[in-house]
Length: 110
Image (cartoon, rainbow, N blue to C red; front, side, top):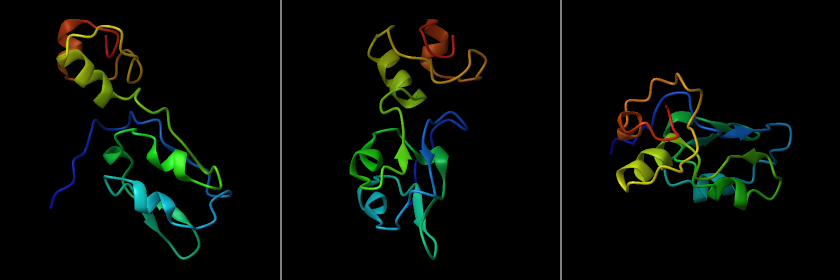
């Protein structure tokens, strides 16, 4: 099954490999297979698959992951489709996002 990819290079996900213990909890809770295990710790396999749900960060016992849950382009696009105009920006103003948000001149990609 093909995995959903969101907009390129806008996700806030960060991994501090020096803190990662290799427990694999993020592999278990990530709904989009963003992570993969190498020999000693987790790596980000495909950052652009991240929907910024925050499950990995909330379940990481080593606090090796950080993400601003709910502030990415996916949240902004969905918010715009629902008519919201208070969504946070998904990146710099010139991010090139071709979402309904841009057409509506809402807070994201604006």
